[in-house]
Image (cartoon, rainbow, N blue to C red):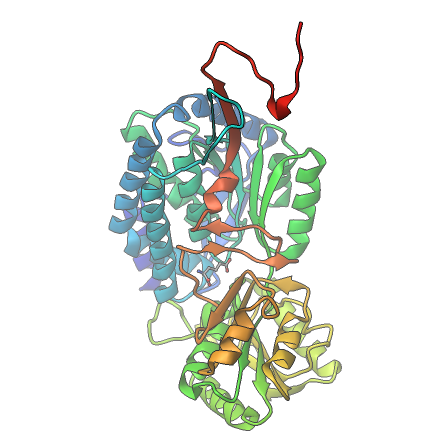
Length: 513
Ligand code: UN1
């Protein structure tokens, strides 16, 4: 029985149903109005969660500020060791946490486990990073002077995350923030609060076990109004927000209004270019996983296929054939490829988009629709659909968080495909399928893809944590995760030390008194 299995997982994660929603670590607060977490898998209510009140939020910030004073003085490699211990727990709890992700969010169990694996990977990365928060040294123009730069923590990092990666995105931010010496306040999506509570419990146990104060990892819950408490708050120097472009524009304006920093990872409209030199098999796997994986609810999901006219029919037929093999159903059952959308609102947006693409001139190649019957009683299961469309259609220009793939043709050289691929407002992920070196290099060149992520012979989704993750244009410009993304979580300081008995001025200025 599925629900019993989930009860077991909740027990393994030490989550009782009906939790409070606000926490500074081991302490929980529960005076706010309650809302429910329900599963799109079977429509069942999993738990009640309490929204964070503004008084509770203030308590959290005060605790976080106090904790920061202590945490920032702990040597970074020792902070790294705390993250290492947290990671040991994640490895131990990978299976129940992955299952909870799958049940609360609706992604396949494989992908739920994959998401926990991303948490594990970023923690490994952060542990190494804790010994490598390097600054540069420079040569001073003045004799007897030394000049260098160093990185100090910022303070409180506010993390706003989306339902589609309910735990990994928090880990990308918090693991880095912690080794950098910051403390974190996390507001998970109100659609997936329970996985947030589970993560908070795992982290809190580790901080408490090491006699570290409350307030290093904090959790708040609720909708955008609770998020706004943070975005407006001058005590929170950095807001890292993942979600829709609409949300990101709000956050950016509010945070900029107080000259805070924001790190934005927003919508994508990702395309795969399929050239005459592509490998058909790889193209089909990359495109189908990219479009229907996570039921099309990744910010890196493949939305558009830009196919050379000379191979268009062959590619189209192979992909349509693959779509006919897809099994849709309970994501906890490993035989299924596609699980439900997050909620009925998402189903409505999916149906609206299908209506619009037809109205705007598109031709449906694989029919969509909502599945009915006992197995689909949550009302959130939809059929992945394909439409032949043109890039300029308003609906194609828009990110619909659902399994709808738009197919289009290009003719002539790869530069024409790149123009279509870049011809949208978003700039997150992009890919080219080709064995032709010239095409691949053109795609990666200055005249190529304008996205933050550009792949060759790989689909648009499934990025590794080692690279910086994020994109340009309406995707928001932020970079999270690997490479040097950590620098956003710190403030840079340039230090010049004079070890002489003279005070020469820079630029050779003479000032005698
Ligand atoms: C997201 O959808 O918000 O590249 C993140 C990927 C994943 C992360 C996606 N590693 O698809």
